[in-house]
Length: 112
Image: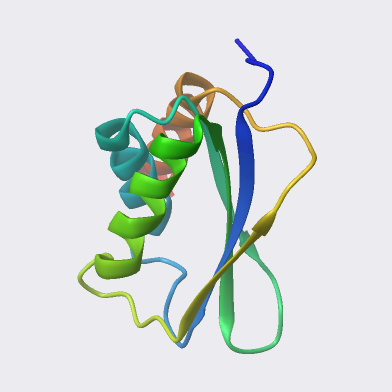
């Protein structure tokens, strides 16, 4: 459910190693812990450094808690140079939809 007045933010996470380290699942778990109901994350293909885009939408207090957490935590194997935030105006999927996508990605890796 979208609530008028919800905050929408886009994070750009960059560094030498932010792909293939479990970052998307890490972000989903962090969002659940912070009570964020809408999130998605995807790799962004640029030359270097590696980039991960994360979209979140919820009440400002929940987004702020999420931002604070991911600023000070990361997946063990990740090498992060910067995390930048900006306002976002598009759609953000519900966390349950993102969880289904993450499950499919993990299952695909098991069988490839």
